[in-house]
Structure formats: structure tokens, C-alpha cells
Length: 255
Image (cartoon, rainbow, N blue to C red; front, side, top):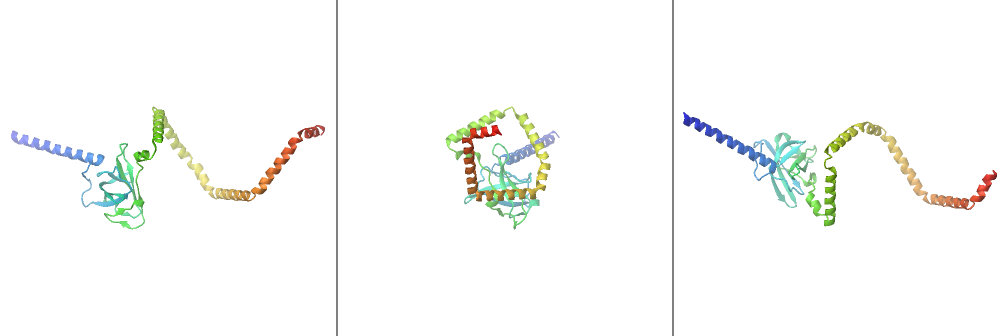
């Protein structure tokens, strides 16, 4: 009896250990994209789509695929094809099929440069069957900050680094102030809706004003010679008056 109890206890401990290892593996795979894929989508219940990017550096297997802010799948592979990086993704079948004009964009998920792929479905164009590719003209890669810095000369990099450090020092301890400012900006954006709506109602009037200003400007440009002569004449008159200011003063006194 005691031997059976020990066997059951050992089995439970072993099963719990296996489950913990699986959960740890899934967490590491999703967070860091290590080269193994434990997709939560069962085989046959997903839709495969590829996307060609100019640069997919930092996108790893297991990275999230997101539609409208929701995780809908995972990256299953990244390979080089000519000058393009082709990212293969598994997407839940309920989001299939995507269409030709759908877009894919690589975004940062954390400050540690982990990335995910965001898909924006678009109607129109042919359906993308499972395994089809979103072409590079419909994809967008983020600007890598290191690449941006490498394009600058050493003096510019130094000044930029100093600027960032000074900005960081100036903002240190100002979190509450920044939060208050953002709250005020939110209120300002809401209060600006009514004035903007009023401007929108007067779009035809504003268009007419702009058109009339354009016509006036054109006419002034066509008459620039006459305007120049007029200004010159006014200058001569002013000069003459200045030369005879004493005589004019005497005349005004007698009046």
C-alpha cells in the first residue's frame, strides 16, 4: 500500500515538473523568440501568410503577430530572399483570408528591442491564399536607432548624445508634471472639437477667402512695376517735404 502511494506521488511530481518545463519553454519562446516554435494554434486551424520586408532584424521565431491590438498568431520563420527578409507567420483561421492590399509593419514591443509584426487587413484586391506573400510595397520596417546613429558623423553623434542626456536630466523627477500636461492636452483636444467643427462648416467661405487672396496677390505681382514707381514717387515727395519743413512750419503757424 505504501509502495503504491509512493508511486502515485512520484508520478504527480513528474507530471507537475513536465508541465512547469512546458510553461517555461512557451514563455521563453514567446518573449525571446528562441529557435523553437511552440505555437498555441493547433495544426490545421491556422492560416499561413508571408511578408517581405526591407529589414526584419530583431524579428524572431515565436514573435507575436497582432491585428487591431490582439495577438492572432506567431512568427514561424525568417529567411533572406534576394534583398528582402521574408517573415512567415501563422495566423488564426478566423482572420483569413487577407487581401492583396493588407499591410504588415514591424513594431517594437519593449525597450529591449523585441519586435512583433502588426497586420492591418484591407479590403480590395485578390485574396491571399494560405502561403501567399504581402509584398514589400505594403510592408514597413522600423528605423533602427543604431543605424541612424551610424549614419551621423562623430561630432553630430556626440552633440546628439549630450542633448539626450540633458533632456533626460531635465525631465528627471518631473513624471507627475508630464502626466498632468498630458491630461491637459487630452482635455484641450476634446475642447477643440467644437471650434474645428465650426471651421469645417465654413469651409466654402474659407476657400473663397483663400481664392480671393490668391487673385489679389497675382494682380499685385502683375503691377509690381507700377507699385515700385508709386513708392519711389512717395519717397521723392517725402524728401521734398523734409527739405522744406521750416517753411511748412511757418505756413502752418500763420494759418
